[in-house]
Length: 127
Image (cartoon, rainbow, N blue to C red; front, side):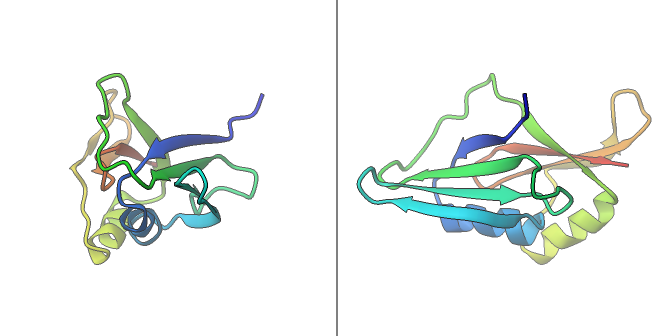
């Protein structure tokens, strides 16, 4: 079994693409519009992952304006070399951390969180 992707539904596709590409440095791997069913899919890969690594799938349903995130979903997590460098990149794109930087619960690593435009949390773990 191989982990492929996580799908999240987004309300403003272009705003979300900008956040993931300019704010976090992801690369768009594939985009497909489905006019008959009125949705668009965009697959993005973190810059540190190879071409076989997992992706984030953004799904934009053209006629849906809002989603309820629910309380069962937590976050996605990414290892980064430097939270400070990621924060600088986020700020240059008009975003910032939503929490941190701080320490992991065991106190051994630096961590921080950033929320995407739809409120999905992304954990950044340094190391």
